[in-house]
Image 1 (cartoon, rainbow, N blue to C red):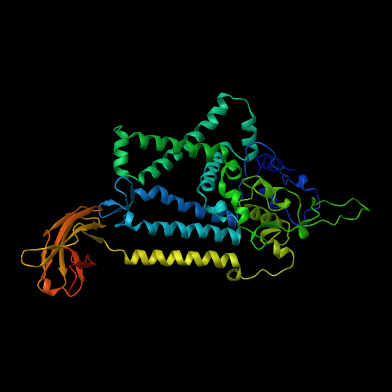
Image 2: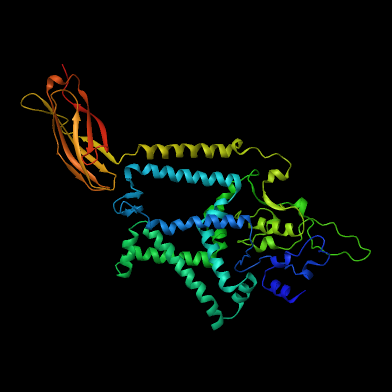
Length: 490
């Protein structure tokens, strides 16, 4: 073995040596040609090896989605923060649309949709959320990538962890921890910024005007991010995450998950030249290089079957395919497959599976309700509360008067000047304020009196319509159907 190959093996970069590996040149023992036979994780922190591949690319692509978390609070819309949970005023602003407690059912439908999407994706392909979309998985991946840049390949990091504390060890590890803390702060700060104006939050930070709730939230979430993503890592997925406990009830034999093909891979063994006079052993395609275990972020050996710690990230597939490609064997020794596939039974179409049908039906209902709610949502909402004591008053001229308390909700982002008019029987008189000023996201109150001549009342309950519109923007209007209550008609 050349000196360069020895250094590559020591640094854990076996991929450079694997490039020279093929069936025609693999007559020597794998160790003798520089393929690092990696040990299986047994204890301590899992330092996963990184290799390129399709699933690794997909993980980074999905991880980039979470950048929106950091950018979201700084998006502006009509001079205000585009996305803002204003808990103090019980309002949710999203790109000019204000969702008030009256419309909270839309948020409930959104949560229902994504909860069922999680269940459906798990039933189809296992813990896809854990492997690709979970913020803890993404943050841990970023933290370990930073760790690799400062401390080197997994074997170097393991040796550094075991080394006694020294100035050199502190010098190597300190920059990594500093960046981890900064990411933790950025995460917690961005979270808080969704509940208050981000620009104002920065300004109050430098003037030391944060409240106790803001300060505590930023510190707790920041250190939690630093601790869970930097130190606990896979232990969070295995020991703390409740989803890991219940996902077993969501999958079945038809669920497609990363699976090792035992019929093709066993018996596993290292490729070597048989001695003169000896017959070459009949081995499977698995060369027992342990690369699939080395790249697993939770230290799972997928060759032992589906396990509790597997988050179905597919990195073991990338690792195995890279080896199969170098030794001129077909890819797919480890692949996404269902247990039913290995029994020889045909996997039914996704839309014919009972679980998927149930989940997708509920998701469709939730999606329809969300779309309907958003399309029918008006920037103005009116409730007319009829006076109950008394229900009506008889005036000196014999006419009947009713009283309402109007609650006008301004869901827009600008001050509303509301005007009220009522339609009903002839001779009706209306007494209400001419201009009702309502601040954005607030409720305006007005008293409405309606007086109708008794001869126009042909029934105890007479329908009337209460119309409310914005003086500055007449297109913003709504109608409330109510009834005028009078005495019994003889």
